Image 1 (cartoon, helix red, strand yellow):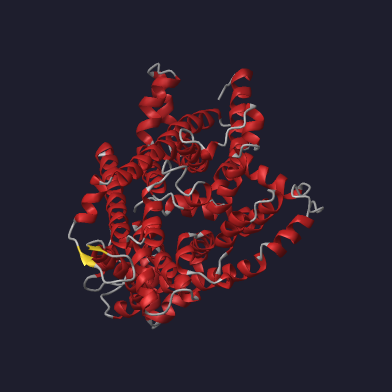
Image 2 (cartoon, chains in turn yellow, orange):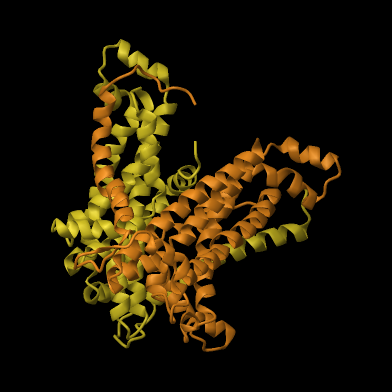
Length: 268
Length: 286
C-alpha cells in the first residue's frame, strides 16, 4: 500500500502518542519509586523497595496473596476441567439448563454477593479467615472456567473421544490421557486469567478480612496509602511491589492474556 | 451448535458436582440471599424489619442514590463512549497504514488492563495531586480529586486511560479479519477513506463494538476499587457510584437492606445491558 511520507510520519506519531499515554502513569510511578526518598529517609533506587517492604509489611501481604492465588488457581482450574469436560463431551438431562446457571456467574458483579456473603459467613464464624477470601473467588473463577473449558472440549475432536472409547479407555482416562495434554494452551490462558483476577481482587478481601496478617497485597497497599502520608516515594515503591507479579507474567505470556480476555468476552 | 461428542452419560453429574457445589454455595445462594435481604431494613446487628420493595423504590426516591446512578452514567461516557470512539479512529488508521511495531504497540496499550486497580489508583492520585505532574504541566495547583467540579471527570479519565487499550486491541483484531477484496471493491466504487470506513470497516466490526461496549459499560458500573482509593466518593458525594454505595451503606452506615437492593439492581442492569447490546448487534448482522 502506498502511503506518503507525511502520512507515515502521522501514523507513527499517533502510535507513539498513544503508547506514551498508556505508559505514562506506569512510568511515573516507576520513576518515583526509584528516585530519592522525598520523605527524607535517605534511601534511593532499590533501597526504597527494601524500606517500603519493611515499613509497609509487604512481605506478609505478598505471602497471603501468593497463598490465596495458588489455592484459587489450583482448585478452580481443576473443578473447571471436570465440569467443562462433562458439559463439553457428555449428554445428560438438564445439561444446558445447568450450563446457563454457570453463565449467570460470569456476569454477576461481586458487589451483589459480597453483602449477604459477609453476614452469612459471620454467622458461621468464618469471616476474617483465609477461606472467606478464597472460596467466593473460587466460585467466581469456576463459573468462567467452566465456560472456557466447555468451549475447548466441545471443539476438540469427536473422533478423538470415540477412538479412546473404542480402545476401552474409561471416561476418567480419556479426560486426563487424551484430552488434557493437547489442552495446554487453553489451560495456560485460564491459569493466567484466574491468577490475575485473584491477585488483583480488592473488594472481597476488603470486606472479609480485618486481621493484618490476612491482608492481600492490594488491600495492604490501600491501607499503606491511607496511613503513610509523609511522601510518595515509598508508596510508589509499594505499588510497584504489588503490581509487578502480574505484569511479569504478562510480559512472558501476553498473548494468553490478550486472547483470553478478548475471547472470553465473546459469546460463542 | 453441534451436540457434544459422546454418548448420554449420567456420570456427567458427578463431574459437575464439585464446581456446582462451590458455585452454588458462594455465588448463587448469596445472590438469592441478596434479594431476600433487600426486602428488609436491617442494620446488620439487631432484628431486621420487613419493608417490601421500599429499598428498591429508594433507588428512584433517594436523591443520593439517584445521584450515584447519575455519576455512573457520566463514567459510562468516559469508560465506554470515549474509548470506543478513540479506539475506532486509532484502529482504523493503524490498520490502513500497516505500520511496523503494531505487536509491540498492542502489548503496551493493553498493559493498563493487567495492573491492579489499587496500583492504578495510587499512580493517578499522585498525578492529580496539587503538587503532582499534571499541575506541573498545566502550571496550577488544583487538587483535581478534591474539586467538586473536576473529581468525577478526573476519575472518568482514569477509566478512559485503561479501557482505550482494550477497545483498540479488540477492534484491531476485528479489522484484521476484513478480507482485502472488500476494501478493493469499495475503492473501485470510488470510495474515499471516510466512505470506506462507513461502508466496509464499521459493518465488519459490529460484533467487536458490541463486545467492547458491553465490557466497558460493565466496568464503569463496577467502579469500586478506583473510587475507594482515589476519592472515597468525595468530595461530598460528588464521586459516589452504585458499587461504592453498596460498600458504604452495608459496612459503614449499617443500611444492609438498601445495600443489597443496590447490588441486585446492579446485577439486573448488567444482565439487561449484556442481553440488549448483543441483541442489537445480532439484529445488525442478520
